[in-house]
Amino acid sequence: MLLVLLLRAFVPMLRQEFAYLTMSYANVSDYQARRAKWESFVSTVSGKRLLSTFSDVTVHSMTPELPDPLLNALELGGRWDFGPVVAQINARMLDLIVIAEGQAETHKDNGYRGVREWDDGMWRALKRNYGLACVFEGMEVWLPNRGSGELLPRLSGIGCLAAAKEAGSGPGRH
Image 1 (cartoon, rainbow, N blue to C red):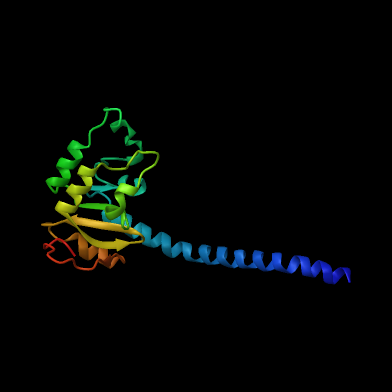
Image 2: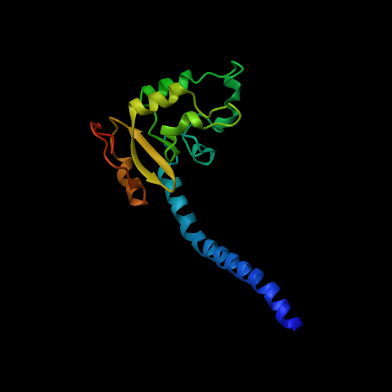
């Protein structure tokens, strides 16, 4: 009788633990494939002029503009100005811009304790001068509207999924 009571108490817990172990094993098994995809992405964008809301992408830029956007609380104190970065976006000087999927539409909701990653001028400049080209692992890759187009085939080759065409999009928009 005691054995039955013990089994009844521990079997649900054992099922939960087994499910957790199965999920962990699947994550570990998939790690090498995910790492290979990430390394392909990094090798494709490294050395390019890029801007990103992801610090781990930004550091691969030829010249990292905003290594940690959340540190830009300095703007609130008047010690930082996004103007030069906005000017670079307007001049299409950046080869690509990488942001979180859907972030261009929801950026006003983003931020931490009133500190936003980018100001409204940067978002407007992005939408005006760059087009959503593809999506890679939850990241949107934006390319200049009138860019050379040499980067998109390389991104597609590593699994960056082409974004749906927008009405009235320019040659660099996809």
